[in-house]
Length: 111
Length: 306
Image 1 (cartoon, chains in turn red, cyan):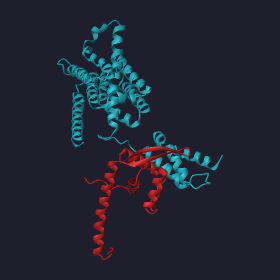
Image 2: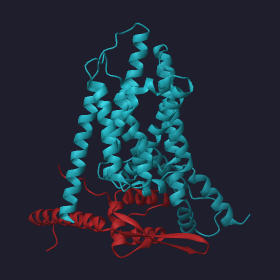
Image 3: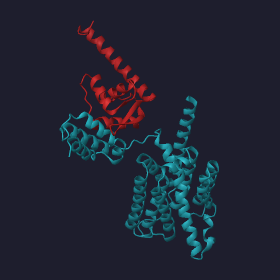
Image 4: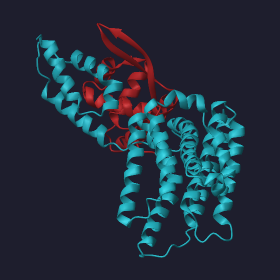
């Protein structure tokens, strides 16, 4: 059975954390930057995703900080999370390569 | 009230959409993120944020608990199980023994229960962390219940004995593969101890008074109320992922006794004859054997690849 493709917000959160541990607000802004503002996560969606990814052991809590009296928890990518991100990247690269080849055959691909 | 205080209060109201354990884990962080991502001067959440919080909360509430064979909560659930079963058995058997002593029957009327009294040694052995000895004692007690079940003059298979037998087999697995009682005592709360002792005492009293000599629907009501009370008590007093897995483990020994009680009540009412139902014991034992074999194989493979 083939593995289900990763959803884009999940891919972007894991990509954000691949740069190093980040807290919730930084993940939100980083995801927006990586996706060129195409994907803008809101707090409800972000924390539902973080909870799910922690349950799947793809990410974990790194450390807590108190800034201006507010809790700031940093999350980091786990080894299984890095492996899942690498696998998804390889899958997307392979799909993109096929699409590029076929577009070239139509004369539409970048040379 | 300042703008930011009013905004925070409204965000906190919206967070109620999420389950309590989600709020405990992420609530304060989410408030910080929400306030940081809202433009200054706003007193009310943006509509899109409000909708996102309500929708996210509903999704979190409706999401079924993830229970897989390999997830990290199983060791905790097994550790709790390794303590929960002997404590409950101890309470149930103690009520039985005390009742017989108090009513003048003495221990003579409990000859079938002498060998399973070994189960009384389980809590001290577990407390002293003699895990291997506890597993051997549980195996001996389970073997005796198995003998009681299959002896030639048994008219029907007694669900209570079947449940004791299965509980002790689950106990052996829990003792053998869990991180141990120290981990269990770190997870258990006083409320859980209370639920386990109350469940054991209720089981002991039930086996004395035979409340299942009732109409079928009355017996069903008693059983459902008992199971619901124990289940709710465990879910409230333990972390939910551990509680749900523990309930799955405890369901194995609970099945024969539950079915037997209902069948007994039905037979007493003259609806059906009491029929032997060995599959109620044999199937769970086979299931336990399969799950244990898979767990042992995965553990061995894990060690091999480590």
